[in-house]
Length: 319
Image 1 (cartoon, rainbow, N blue to C red):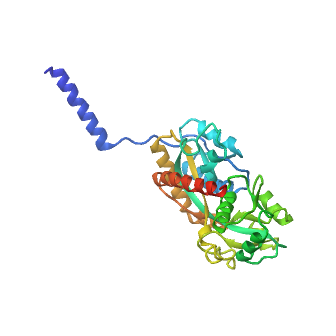
Image 2 (spheres, rainbow, N blue to C red):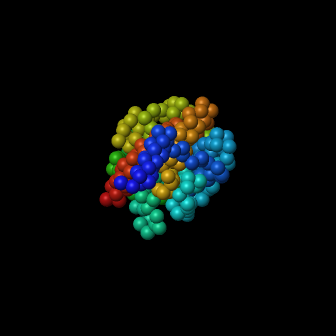
Image 3 (spheres, rainbow, N blue to C red):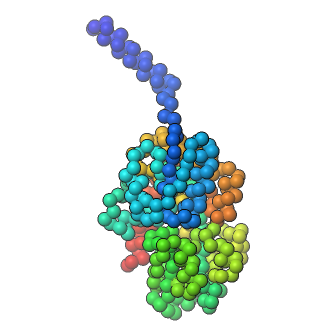
């Protein structure tokens, strides 16, 4: 055998063994501005939570992390097609996973074209009704709706939004008929309830809480597993007799599917460290949100199963 070839082979094995032994350091990240695209309006829950996380990540990374509000499908479509380098991420919620069911002709796949980066928080929802509506409990409300099938309306902060999905699940489990009235966001939906244009809104906790506190609307129940410290007299769905309707919104970061795993892992670890900070937990709590973290792999797996579950809710709601 040629001695030069043997020496070359030995050298290659040596270099490979050194690389394995010492490992390859992941590329430095970030080295420039990072953008969180929020496909909802300023003041939405995604926007509020995103700004808290972005501010702390800016401090940690020594690089600007900015929020870009691009409401609607345009924002999501933009992130699906940007360079897969981790510098542009989508900060969104449950509603993302059913976009293709609602819009079959979209130029992207909401599940296949994205990968999970990090879960940020979960948020229960409050069942909010007009102050003048003659009900005082969730059971009263169900009884009233059943007495007027198809004659009452529910407000949704956009078709397929968290509030819409929560309402659909509730209607399915209680076998109720209520007409959907979609609005551009939570502020408009709340206004419709105050004015009596709609009879119920499934409002994310932390959004419009002052309206409940000021007795502008009534809160009948909370969709989470525990009562909210801010509203200790509002029962959970389980306590109010509707355990099967329990539902919590989640908010998290997604990336274009081609972003390298090492970049995703770096973002995941940094985000987990940030939301673990006591002041962030306190700020989230004031918004009605509970800090939640998972590994990127766990979050991606959750996204797959959640897409199937939410799709089933939609399918059942139109049967």
